[in-house]
Every structure is written in structure tokens, then in C-alpha cells.
Image (spheres, rainbow, N blue to C red):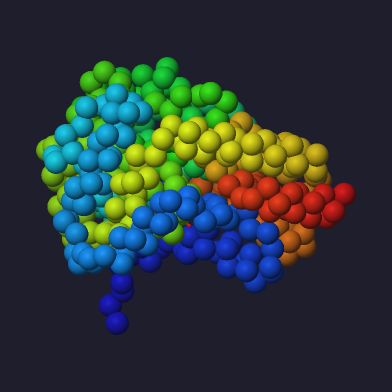
Length: 385
Ligand code: PMP
Ligand code: GLN
């Protein structure tokens, strides 16, 4: 038999699936893969159920149902004062994962370069490479995840087609500041390229930090593709409804990729997400403040066990240095060890770096019921106590 595609066959199974399978096998408290253990807002689920009963349940329009596209545009105006034409500048996809893939396939040519920050979400590099482009990685290091400006500037070249920016950043929990975004915007303009902005955690930001879309900076409106996810904004990660905002010509090309990837997304979920995006300010404020309390709860618990936690201004994730516990081994060893021996699962942070990343941090997910977090901490305390 001839070989299947060499780019994709070179990658293993994603670390999230690997760790979740291990967690099930050992009946551990799973703080690995990032998903809430709640069931999302009742009213949003009720809308989805209602829409499932009534017709139509056939193919929705390729670009998304008008209500959701209008809601995406209104949400952009409400939170970021972006003026968005829903008909030419918004598109619905099957999760942010599909938005990312469509944007990369739509914009990249073989030979292009894409600048990305490490640690990075695991779907980026496989798609960049499958599109025939090459990644240029700029490394952020725990515990403060500072932006290395000189390295960033050096990663750009005449071949740079795009930067892929994830803020708030999974797994680091870093929220890029306006000053940092200005540096990035300057380079994007200087090199006349695009910015693909993964902003799925836009509403999960703590300590009064603002989430600033790169798209809102001067000169960036036409260059940015802004991506959101209902999975994160409504704590319904299984729904896989994503949405994208971009200038008309850019969006039109990305839509060409989308039409051959999934073409469309279940209509009832789209209607429910349209309703959800219109929820009042209290919903959004408590999403962030509830999650901040969970971060603090886990941070306190892990600190008492003896971990040293890294900075975390947003996302679902807290990274913890396990060296103070006296564990001598890699982060992979550590995450395997605590799953099997302590009954708690985390994800090794080195999985988010290509090579030679820090190997003494574990990523713990805190978007869980308080009792789940407390149980995880109690098990770790007992094991390391
Ligand atoms: N980007 C980042 C940074 C994520 O953490 C996730 C969550 N899985 C995604 C994209 C994918 O989002 P979705 O589930 O909507 O495809
Ligand atoms: N975004 C989630 C995480 O980072 C998992 C997504 C997935 O399992 N593909 O843990």
C-alpha cells in the first residue's frame, strides 16, 4: 500500500485524548482536558432543545444562520465597539477548531511562514504544515510568560503570511496587554501580513484585565481574523459552534475552505448560541468572576500541597511547577504518576512546545465544580503529604 499523508501521520494522538483515556482507566479526577463538569446555562440548552423540535433541521446556510451571524456582529459591537457587517464579515463554523483550519487553509500557500507563540494549542502546527507552510516559533516561558520582543521581531521575514495569536493563551493563561499587542500590530503592518486571532477565552479573563482583540488596534481591522467559540463562552464544549469575523475579501477566501471542510453546523445549536450571545451583562460578568474564584481555589489548594503556580490571567488553566514536591522526572512522568498513584490527572506542559520546552510544569484545569477541585487537591495532599 502507498503511504498515507506524511504530515499528519507524523503526529501522535492529541495529549487531551491520551490523558482523558488514562483518567477514565484509573478513575482519576480529570483536571487534564479542558472542559467544565457542569452542563452549561439552562436557558441556552432550552433554546437548542426547542429549535431541535421545530423545523428546519436541514442544511442551514453555508455561512451560518442569519440570527447567529447578526448576534456575532452585535456582540463585536457591544464588547469591543467593532462595526461589523454581518452579511459580509461573519461566518459560523463547527467549533473554533474549524475556524482555525479554514483560516489557515484559506490564507496560506506552500512556502509561506506563520509566526506562532509557544506554548501553543495542539491543532495549529499540523494544519500550518498540512497547508504547506512552515511555523516560526516564539517561546514564552513560565512562570511569567513575558513576550520576548527581539525574538518576535526576528521570527518575521518577507515570507511571513500570518501570525497566529491566542489571547487569552491556552495553556499559559497569559492575557496579552495593549502594549504587547501594539508590538505585534507594528510587526504585522511592517510585514504586510495577516493575524489569525484565536480568542476563544475572550470572556474568561481575571483580575480586571481587559481582553483586547488585536482587531481593535489601529490598522488591524482589515488584517485580522477574529475567532470565538460557544464552547467556551457558554461552557458547552461539546457543541462545537465557532464564529469568525474578518474583512469581506479575507472572509470570502476563508469561506472557500469552510465550504469544503464542513459546509455547515447544526441549526438548533446555532439558534441557541444566537440567543446566548445576547445574554445580559450579568451572565458575562459572572462567567469570569466564577471562573476566577475557581482559579483562586485551585491555586490555594495546589500551593498548600507545595506546588509553585505560574501567573494566570485568563483561560481554564493553571500551570504548576512540581519540583518543590521533590518529584524527579519529566512532566510526562509526573502527569502519569499522579493519575495512577494519586488519582488526579493533569496535562504535561511540554506537550504544548515542539521541542525542549519546560518539563517541570503540569497544566491543571479549574473549570470544575468546587467539590471536584477540592477532591483533586485532597488527593494530591494525601499522596504528597
Ligand atoms: N483554541 C483554543 C486555544 C482552545 O483551547 C480550544 C478549546 N478546545 C479551541 C481553540 C477549540 O475550540 P472549539 O471546541 O470551539 O473547536
Ligand atoms: N481545549 C481543550 C484543552 O486545551 C481541549 C480540546 C480538545 O480536547 N481537543 O484542554
